[in-house]
Image: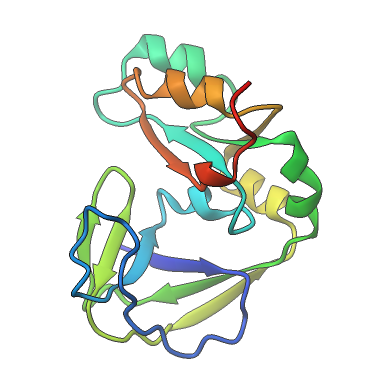
Length: 171
């Protein structure tokens, strides 16, 4: 399985474990985070760009597929105010060997390592929209993420919500 870390910094030679910010994780163990190739599109945005992402899983109903996955099997939804930032952001994909990583969350595609990791490859993405298209991902633009945020949680899709603290306030 291919594992990646997405960054706006092209100069990282070694990834050192960091204490997780999530309150549900052990704050005494630093972690290096990686994302699998299936869920990589969830991170093909500027770092602080709020987004709602979803794709079908093995238990996704045909009704949810037909309603939410109209043009591509994976969808990333961002707010309109982030479109220009997305166009001007350059991303770097660091690839890791899978050794030393353990699966942390299958649905979200997260794997973690408690030891420093040296990337085996570095890929530059200078056109995020094209990178999404190449991966058969639909980019949807909305004024506010809150409707899809609330709705998608009640589906059979695999979903992820990132940086919602940076989203436009609810009405």
